[in-house]
View: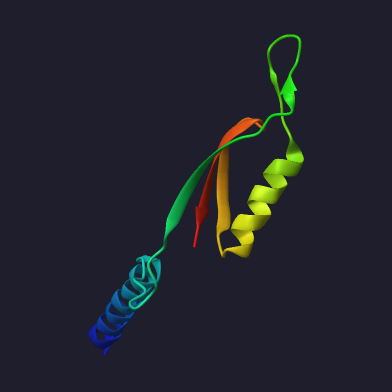
Length: 91
């Protein structure tokens, strides 16, 4: 009787560990549409300061971002400064 209980407990532990391992493994989504990425180098300037730094034009950047959004692109990240940057989009 005691050995049956021990075997039952060991079997339950194995089942629970298998469930935990399954839940933590990455799941592959079959049939998912592939991602498409686009990198836009954008330089916008209203001019330069007396120190030679660019003065960014936020209206131009906003227009560019809104146009990409209308075309179905989602902004992932932007790298750089407000005057010159690489914008990374995905679709």
